[in-house]
Image 1 (cartoon, helix red, strand yellow):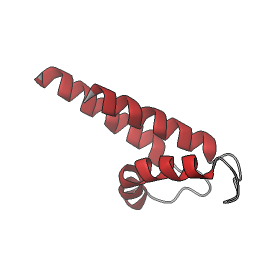
Image 2 (cartoon, rainbow, N blue to C red; image 1 turned 60 degrees about the vertical axis):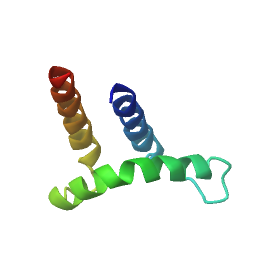
Image 3 (cartoon, rainbow, N blue to C red; image 1 turned 120 degrees about the vertical axis):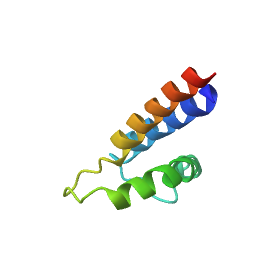
Image 4 (cartoon, rainbow, N blue to C red; image 1 turned 180 degrees about the vertical axis):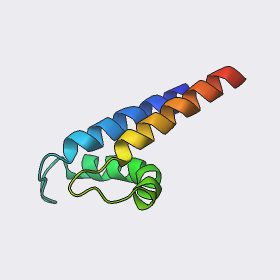
Length: 79
């Protein structure tokens, strides 16, 4: 559980950083970016649908990281 949580944590942070740049599909980094989006979208997509629109800002990564933290705390207390 801890390794999975760390992978998700770093994937979400990477996605936030990637969102600051315009990467074209012809870029050599595009397959890695698609992988990161594929990992994070199942988590952030539902959160984004629930959160109210706030203009240009997407707070779903913040909410996802907070939820991930709480899940880690709960999992640690159970085991």
